[in-house]
Image 1 (cartoon, protein in one colour):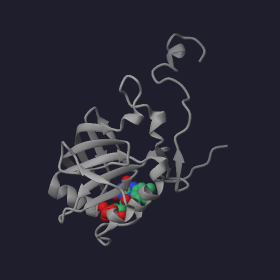
Image 2: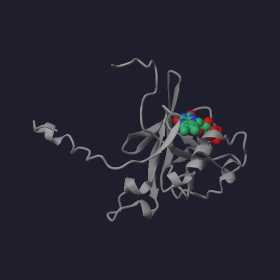
Image 3: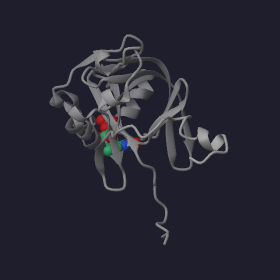
Image 4: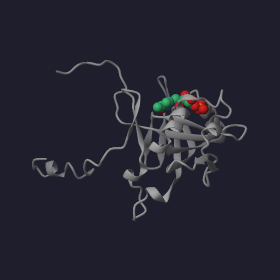
Length: 192
Ligand SMILES: Cc1cc2nc3c(=O)[nH]c(=O)nc-3n(C[C@H](O)[C@H](O)[C@H](O)COP(=O)(O)O)c2cc1C
């Protein structure tokens, strides 16, 4: 039997994105964002509004987006609880390391294995939603998450995923099958 659950953001999994920017005094800010995605081959769209991060992006026109890994779950969660607006040593408290991106005016957090370096493009406003769009200028990754062909191996990322039903983080699971492959038998009129 099915049940109606009402209006609900019923998507799973959500990413755990780490948006890093520079504050006006040059200090580093990182915020946690689950409502973000890639929206074309070279663009990201982040539904973030009213944060210190937004002010930073307005000023610097740049940000980086990293994938949080299991080893840094506590820091990733903290970045979603604390605001640099009120806590001036927000980033410093974590003991993580930031270096300036070689490509944009934003920090790269060394401990996160995979990071997109983005320049600000525009903010799209629709009914109650503010969406920050950025162009991916470069992707930087630690070599330990790459396979022998130099491509990112998702299993090596050890990424965490956000469960917005239960407010929990999950670790990435095992491979279930091939994309653009699992459906091929049905395309051929065979049984799946
Ligand atoms: C799991 C998680 C996901 C979050 N996702 C978003 C999001 O997608 N958009 C948003 O505006 N805030 C989101 N937040 C809240 C911000 O990360 C939080 O308000 C943070 O303190 C902002 O930091 P800042 O003021 O230093 O920029 C999320 C928080 C958590 C814990």
